[in-house]
Length: 241
Length: 225
Ligand SMILES: Nc1ncnc2c1ncn2[C@@H]1O[C@H](COP(=O)(O)OP(=O)(O)O)[C@@H](O)[C@H]1O
Ligand SMILES: [Mg+2]
Picture (cartoon, protein in one colour):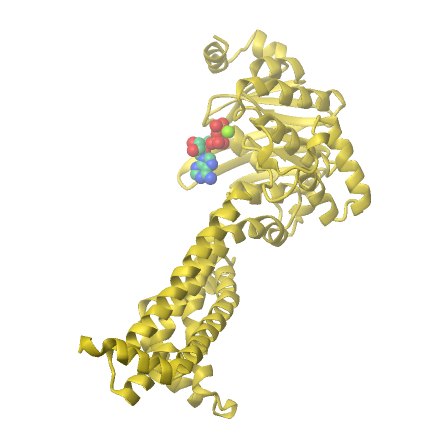
């Protein structure tokens, strides 16, 4: 579904990604772990071109997104993204947050989308908040809203960038539960996370990134049970302590 | 001099009270036209400053720098003399020429207000909108601008207050504003201080009450966040 070929990214003199090759198949659940500053967010943001790669290709359904004349807006409709800081639209109600893009991009009619928005909100326990302004929501509620806002576009893959890192500890669980529900229903997902227990439980594959490269990739068993790279071992020994 | 102040004030008010009202009307009209025009052109300039094309950006930046780097009075003179020369067929009145000059000036300041208002909106808002598939324009009009308006509106009102004071410079060209009327009355009665006091009180009452209103508006907008 997504193929990344020789992806590099430079910010000025800073080489952040140094040649990433990776293939994501439909239905896979991929966790990306690694020390802070290793390029995980940049990698994720290159997948939907929030960051323009310096070189290399991002091939989505056979189309190189970095190519000239690619209608990136159309491809982004099929890739949902959830941010660490939610980025909920504060001037819209909860329901409007969900319904805005699908109606605007004519994915669904207004009536139909209203209905669907309520259904989605219900699924993550936000039905009662449908007409509230987001400022009244807790962090966990905001992140659940951000997830259904992305889902409303019927994406084929979901990109999560540390979806629980900005949350108070007591709210982490409710958000992880929503993500778990999604992946169990077959949603292809790429999840940058520091929740090692969660990564181990839900992933089909784990990527360990270090200094702009995928240092090691494998099943959760391999990465968490028998990491072969010295750097992976070192990282895990620090975070699992 | 001061002994006669009270009777003199009475004389000024009874004979020329209507001139102050008229002057106030012109001052308000001039300020309103300036800020409205300034808002339209200033917003356009702000968009130009965010353009993808370097030339467009450079033009807008140059405009803002030139306007901010030269005195308003100079700009007024320039338009007052240049516009009728450049567009003789339009037969522009001096009021219109001066209004255009004020709009020219205010646009540069409004441009910076709009730009700052847009930049104050968290960039994550744009990113979230773009990842949903909205185009840059759609993200701007539906997500960023509605939030930016909360920052822009109070600043625009403050610009209105600033312009009210600046229009006094337009009296150099006798366009009928409050300061023009002061000059008229001073010439008729040979009184320097008394009509000035009246004009000052009017200006102050106007700007002070407007500032209070704006502060209220600002609190409202913040609360509705
Ligand atoms: N827009 C940017 N401009 C300059 N440097 C950046 C930018 N985004 C990220 N970086 C730098 O790139 C490196 C990797 O960042 P990031 O991908 O956010 O790492 P991670 O998500 O693994 O913590 C960091 O050193 C960071 O400072
Ligand atoms: Mg990150």
